[in-house]
Structures are given as structure tokens and as C-alpha cells.
Image (cartoon, rainbow, N blue to C red; front, side):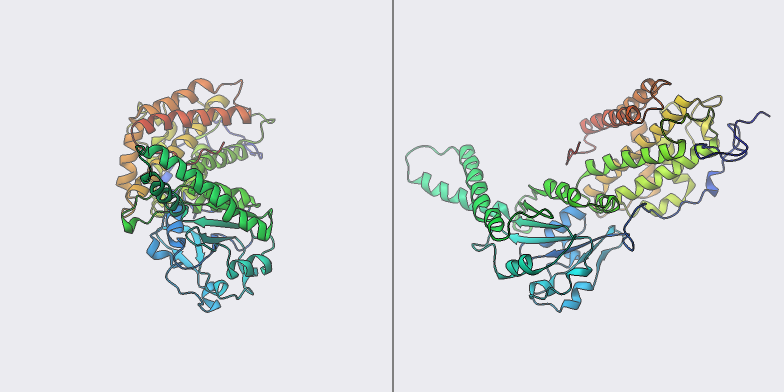
Length: 465
């Protein structure tokens, strides 16, 4: 029997020893380790954040919207001002809901005790309400003038901007009532927004910058956070900017990955990182674009690449109920099955290359196409799971859920568009080119998403190109 492998695999060789096309892969014996990122800061495997602000400024609501956890579980709005500083070090975690996040209460800071800033080493959010006539009070002055946070980035969030808009709307409405003209409500709302922005720029953001100057490591965001318990619609104007600005302020790549995994607001941010990390796995496996692919790749090698891609993408999307399921080879094979055309084998067996209908050793272009389809398919399936959980937070992902999502995706026009683009656009002329492969992958994913959007399977949040 002819074999297609190198007896002594080098650094760019995907093949394991004795790996060949016809060699059966027992996927049930593949061990999937827990999700991890490379290049994380020492002793930092979760995104740790300190939220500071007075009671009632919307800290719990912000945490709920950004991190996808129930507001009553965040703990940051249920402790009174002046809590003992030791309370700051009691971590608030969210097992089963967001495994990538640790929150800390800010009682000690609000009491004027600033000695414990040094140990908060990820991020600080300082929340100030736009409802206050005196947005910059003694607590804020004490913190920003005296606290030495070093390289810790700080985001100042002016919450409840919607209240400022409402105030200006009411003022304009009272003025209109004294006139005989008919009230143009659309124009009134536009004027109220413009007056509120000018008010914010002068008396809130403006006052902050006048008091403390513009600082490189401090970002300022305004946020509209209506209260759903009062019957107001749950709009979150400004959350997109908050999520994007936060990531932009982080210097370490590992912290950026942790933030992307911890935030549960932007599917676009997670999807973009899934593509980039998947490509990293791909190029680390096959070497740089200047080193040719090995001529042939065996089943075990491709399945190992699939496992690495699945694990890293699973970590980015941070769906806790999904992670334990990946220890089951049947669940892993569901994800693999969802990456390829519906015309492939109905059941993915251990000879998964046969199931892909490749009757012969893979060429370099075919190898690229197969792995790019893995990255695209897994990423799009996780986006479906992300919106499923976001729309049904009381549910958990089960093997049946994944099976249903895979079936829907494989039957969708989006999957066919994604698959066809990679099949016909990846060839021997561009399969060695990093930029070309990434561009084709991004286009293929967007082709899959555009149809998914028309079918009501997702809604876009942040477009971060």
C-alpha cells in the first residue's frame, strides 16, 4: 500500500507519522483540552474589570448588556456606598453564563479609599450619570486627580444620556405649546437630540476634559440606557462604541482576545477574531506563505487542524454550555459536517476525507479549501448559536441544538454560497498567499452571513473593518 507522508515530518509537515489518505481516523479517541489563548498576561486567564460609580447610575444594566449576564447577578448595584474596601477583592463570577469574566465591586473607591487600585490589572470603567446636575463631584475628582492607575486603561461612561435627551425634548415641547403652529414631532426629536449632544459636549464631557485634561489612557463614552422595569424599550445607544473603544485601548494581544471572548454584545467582533485565529492555526500548521505546502495531507493531520480551529473559535464565542460538549466526538463531527456541502455524506464517519468525496490525496489548493471551509463553517455555526442563546438566555446548548443548527445551515443558501466561493476561488495561484486566502475567507463568510441575515438568523452590531 502506497503511503503519502514524510518519515521525519518537518515543521511545515501537517502529517503525523504513518498518516495516509486511507488510514482510518478514530475521532472518538481525540482528546479536546479546555479552551485557552496563547500570549496571555501572567496569571490572567479571565478578563477582570472594576466598575466604579454611584448607586443608580446604570452599572448593572451596562454589565448585563455588554457581558450577557442577568443584571441582578452582577452585584455592582446592590452594595451600598462605603462598603469595606475588602469587598473590592471579592470576585463576582458567572459560571455557566460567562466564563471569561470577573467583575469587582467599587465600594472602597466610592468611600475615598484609593490604596487598592494597583491590584486591578485589566480594566476600570467609571460610570457617571447624565441625570446629575453636578456630573463631576468630589469622588470623581479624588479618583482622577490622585489615583495612579499606571497602564490600566480607564473608560469613563456617562450613562443615562437618554434622560438628557428627554429633558431637552420636554423643554422644546413646552415652548411649542405656546405657539400656534402645529408641532412637528420628528423635527422636535431631532432638535432635542442635537441640544442634548451640545449639552453633553459642553457640560459633561467638556467639564471632564477641563477638569482633568485629555489623557491617552482614558476614553469617554456617552450611553443611553433606558430602564426596562419602567416600561421603556431596551435600547442601548452607545454600547457599540463602548465595546469597540474598550478593545482599542487594550495594548496586549492576549487581553484583546479575552475582551472579545468576554463581551457578549458584538457578534461581528467575535466573528472577525474567529477568522483571524482560524487563519493563525492554519498558517502555523502549514508554514509561512514562502514555504510550499507538502504535496499530500492525510486524514489525521486534517482532523487535528480541525480540532485546533474548533477549540479556539469555541473560546472566542464563549458559550459555556458548548464547551463540555466538545469532548464528545459525535458533537465535534457535527460541527465538521456543517462545514461542507449538503451533498456530502449524511453521516460523518471516522474516514472523514471519504465523507468529503475526495477520492485521492489532496493537493495544496484542496488542502487550503478544506481548512478554509472549516474556519468559515465553524465560525458561522457559532454565530447561529450566539444569537440562539442571546434570544433565549434561559436555554442551554445541547447536542440536539447543535444538530438542528447544523442541519439548518447545511440546507441554507448561505452555506452553499460560502462553500462555492471557496471551492472556485482558491487555486494553485493563490493558495500560498496569506492575504489572498484571508480575503477569500472573509468574502465567503460574508456570503454565508448575508443570506443568514435575510432569513432572520442574525443582526449585525459592530462593523469593525
